[in-house]
Amino acid sequence: MQYLQLAELYVRLEKTSKRLEKTFFIAEFLKKSSLEDLRNIVYLLQGRVFAQADERKLGMSSQLILKVISHATGESKETIEDNWRKEGDLGLVAEKFIAKKKQKTLFGKVLTIKKVVDNISKVADMEGEGTVQRKVALIAELLSSASALEARYIVRTVAEDLRAGIGDSALRDALIWAFYPKIIGIFFICDSCKALIPNTGKCLICGEKIKQKFSEAITKKIPKDSIISKDEKEARELYNTYLEEVQHAFNVSNDFGIIAELLKENGPRGLKHTILSVGKPIKAMLYPKVKDIKEGFEVVGKPAMIEPKLDGFRMQIHGNKDKITLFTRNLENVTKQFPDVVAAVKSHVRSKDFILDSEIIGIDVKTKRAVPFQHISQRIKRKYDIESMAKTVPVVITLFDIIALNGESLLDLPFEERRKRLKAIIKDEKHSIEVIEQFISSDVDKTEKYYEECLAKGHEGIMMKSIQGTYTPGKRVGQGVKVKPVMESLDLVIVAAEWGEGKRANWLSSFTVACRDKDTLKDIGKVSTGLKEKSEEGVSFEELTKELKKNILQEKGRQVMVKPKIVVEILFEEIQASPSYSSGYALRFPRIIRLRDDKGVQDISTLKEIEHFYQGQK
Image (cartoon, rainbow, N blue to C red):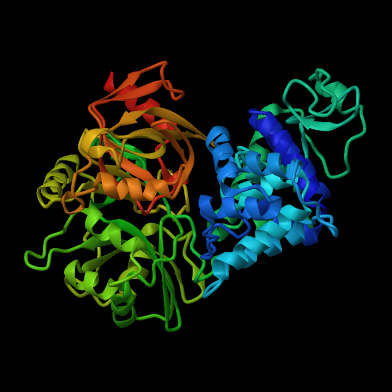
């Protein structure tokens, strides 16, 4: 398939903010895509060329992309950079200069999906002397053959800033619309062009208003694989089973590309082949917060398993023979950064095939007490002196669940049974590797007392888990809840910042933060307190500025727009209604307490959660 066809789809997606329309456009495109191109197309729609859990990184900075555009167009790097500062989008800059490029390529080729992916993929594998020049040449080759429109999206893909507004849920639904039987009752047939389209009120093909009468719809030509349902509730329930199937397949594979191929080739039954695989991370099960222990019992039932809520970071541990692989909850491979964890697992786990869920806690060498999360989170990005840091801040591996064992998926086993399997293979060693302490209770008062004891020990609170609960990747369901003190923190992503003044002139010192509303981000205010002048005192202005500078999209005066990649945990005094921000809310007296290197934008607090907290204040 020609890359231009995908670029034209990107344009259609950019022009609409309506999620149903985006889903429809993607679904129609996937249906006509060849099996050979399908996986690459799905990745490109996500703004990448690899699966989400793939360790390879492109590593193309904005400055390097400026060189690429200069090399492909013959324009000076300074001219291109001036245009970038005005436009704030390297893709639009590439489009502009390719359209009027000085040097015409004599042997320009039609770009295919495969050619674009091949060239961009090679960038991630390059190392050694001359790497920068070779990276520039590979991407410049694409731009030299590209049309102006293709150039826009090639550059945005390389910059990892697609700007087409395609979230996981839209892509998931598009796969259903493309490859599952249509449910007449949710989908309607246009009276004018006879297209089978989702219930949006108007035809997404010809624009005509849909006469939403079922009797009219079924008199038209119905596709053979359609399922007819006169009951809207029944239709919705069936569609929800589709959603669950595809979502589950994604939760255990983290790869929409593979899912698309399986559906294209075998239909819905193909998803039976998406199984747990040691070495490939799955989405971690998430636990919602409840206001108190009484509500916790209402959610998980009685009796419940009670555990301390630890102030560490989540780590998924995969064991395959003698190979141990470690992943953060953000699916990042951090095996090299934690050789001490690898060694402890090898010597204390009585199995050669497993997936474990754990919390990693930093320990003070002298007092043996837990240290704040920030001390060990620094190891996630550490490349040098890892052994030294491991000795300075050793960690304890606290295991609390098991997901797979000896080739068997344990997702559907009750938590009580999974706990037994976990304890059977772990040789506990204090201050090294331990199965988390736990007791079973139906008593609110006893649980309250244990909660107070956990807080006194420096823990964040307690976890309450259903004895019969299964492991549901990626979902906040009734399998477990967390109980923490009333003051809640939010995990938000930085989307903009401002350069400071005076002694902070070289630092970014005011940060606009956003929450997640389905597939979009909505700002909820600015925060400038909580950071330190020196890094040894906590999160510093210098440290955060260094991370944000890698992700700058646009600068206008003191204002800086950044890629939404840096997640921060924020405490606040109150949530207020506010028309000033797109979320409709603002935080009163917010302050940053730590970076969340273990979390990505998909893990941040949602608008729905913030609305819940806001209502709870009343």
